[in-house]
Length: 204
Image 1 (cartoon, rainbow, N blue to C red):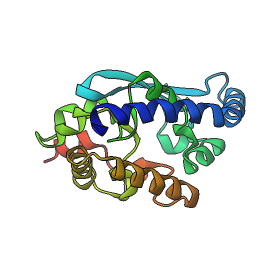
Image 2: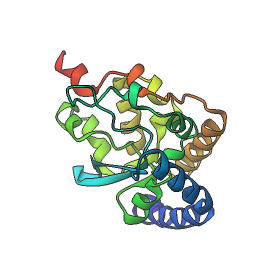
Image 3: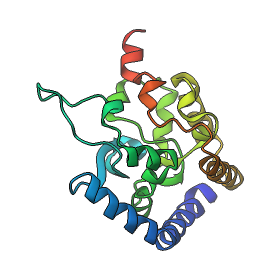
Image 4: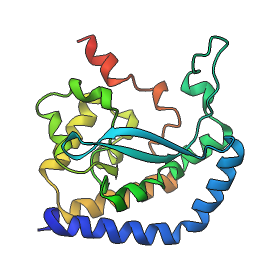
């Protein structure tokens, strides 16, 4: 009953309340990022959601669009702005995903939506992560976030899907809030500690 009805109900109510409470912060970040990114405060990217249906994820932009002399976009580390580092460290970049939750693209709790190009590299078991809506946070995030290797991370996603419950979601939510407040397991530049899944499994 929780998985089929109440989980979505709590998502909608939580997203509405969150958008109202966080409106002053959202407004301030929107203004600051509009000024620092030359009118592009938000980052939007296509991601696979429930049943691998593609949706557009919303985040606050933390990197500029600088390119090298050949017109090639610079590495993430070189494009991450000072304000962007703070926003990532405090997880404020995830706030716009409340809109994704409200739309029904995402849930508060679930496997994080990863890149479309990773889809061919999941095992049959790992594909179960797409049986439910992706989340703003999830079991993998409170278990080490980007500090986990891919096998462990995807295993946690499947474990969550197999054991969805109100008590587990509540526990994940509280631990996620605690980790954000203490900056635990937060890596400002994930590419510095974690290889892309497709590049990793192409070598297997």
